[in-house]
Structure formats: structure tokens, C-alpha cells
Length: 241
Image (cartoon, rainbow, N blue to C red):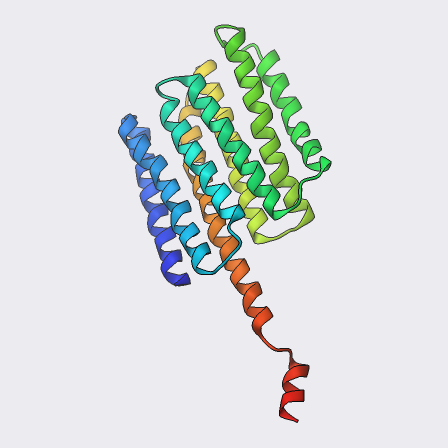
């Protein structure tokens, strides 16, 4: 089962990369929708694996819901920017809560988030390259920066507490997501060249990593359960004597 799921993840990753490249070249909403649906499928496949391995489902389900909102935000962003940003923000809230299922929330998580948010806010508010076309869009950008910064801060805090492969994957995915949104901001409101391509090159792999984290979580859970079910050597000796 594990090998089949790993192979499925590899196939989905290749399909996601192909769709990402196709969207960069063609730029159609249909291709973007297919690419977004692909990372949700990654999450769904890995959730099925988590169910099969009888892992605790709070983290996998919350992560998958976050991926669904990211997909919706990705699609709606092309139709209505603020509505898309709101959907993305809701997704980040679900990601934050899912990370809290791995390491219990405490105030230090917020400190790391604020460390990331403060320079992000100053960039948005003070950098002369941005033209938001009004106060409303600027406020939306700042609020969104706060939410995604708290999400990345929680991922960083988790890794500091527990240096596991799972937390490494989540942090890399979260940071890539953050950087892709920064590139999006520079593309839409500063009209800088190339950053749109960088945004897409970061975004879809980031979403794949977040979806793949469900597999890593389930696999870790299976390994723990397997070890628990093994009698220790002392018990073995006692039984044979």
C-alpha cells in the first residue's frame, strides 16, 4: 500500500508540474483550475492512506480542507481578486489549525508570526513600487500578510520544537507558499517582470508539499504503531524461559 501511494504521489507531482508549465505558457483559467485540482487530489489520496493506516485524522482532514480553500482561492483570484484573497486566507487559517494538531499552540507561535509579518507589512505600506489603487486593497494586502505570516510562523515554531521530517516538509511548503504570494503581490501591484513566473514556479510545488505532508504524517503514525505492537526483548526472553 505504501509503495502504491508513493508512486501515486510521484505521478501526481509530474502531472502537477506539467500543468504548471502549461499554465505559465498558455495562461488559461482552465489549466489553472486543473493544476489546482491536482494538489487537492494529492491531499485526498494521502488522506485515504491515513484512513487506511488508522492515523488520527484531525491533521489530515484540516490540511485537506486548507488545500480545497487554496484551490478555490486560486481559481476565484482570476475572477475577483479580493474574494480570492479571502478564500486563500481561510485556507491559511485551516493550515494554522492543522499545524496546531502536530504541536500544541502557544504564544511563541504568534511571536514567530509577528517577526515575519512586521517586515512584510512595512514592505507593503512603505515600498514606493506598489500601486494598490486605493486604501481598501492595501488593507486587504496587509491583513492577508498577517494571516499567512502567522501560518508560516507556526510552521517554523513547530520545527524548532520538533525537528522531524514532517515539520521540515511543512515549513518548506509554507515558506514557498509565502514567497509565491510575495511574487504575486509584486506582479499584480508593482508590475515587475518575471515575478509572475517565479510565483507559479513556487506555488504549485508548495501546495504539493503540503498535500504530501499528510502521507508523511500517516507513515510516521504507522511506524509508531508498529513499534508499539512489537513485544520488547525482555518480554520475549521471559516467554521463552
